[in-house]
Amino acid sequence: MSFWESLWAIVGWFLWAAIFIGYLMALFTVLADIVRDDTLRGWAKALWVVFLIFVPFVTALIYLVARGDGMSERSAEVMRENKREADDYIRSVVHIDPASQIEKAAALLASGTISQSEYEHIKSRALAG
Image (cartoon, rainbow, N blue to C red; front, side):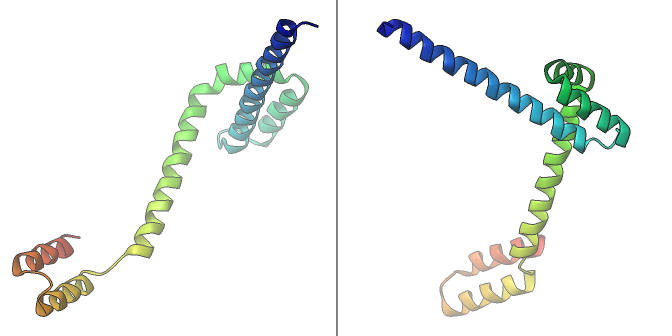
């Protein structure tokens, strides 16, 4: 086998590996969406999964064509929910009440670390939320 033949064989293997990985990603994305979908009931989900196991390529294509729009909406909703939960958690951990902020700013003003205008700015920001 010459150098060029072995090089093209390696390129061919990489191409098929990339196609296979893409196919697996699509398959698992469809499977995750089937499980996540609230509009499908148990038997419909089971039927989709059975077809996905026995005729995976055709079933994945049919699912993407038939239910692709809802798939993107469900994915966006999950992302929004995750972001909202993360933001709520961050707010609960980082929350400092306005009185505490004003008290700290007053201590800094009394020690001469900040000026009166900086104190007023911190106070207005704390009261604004």
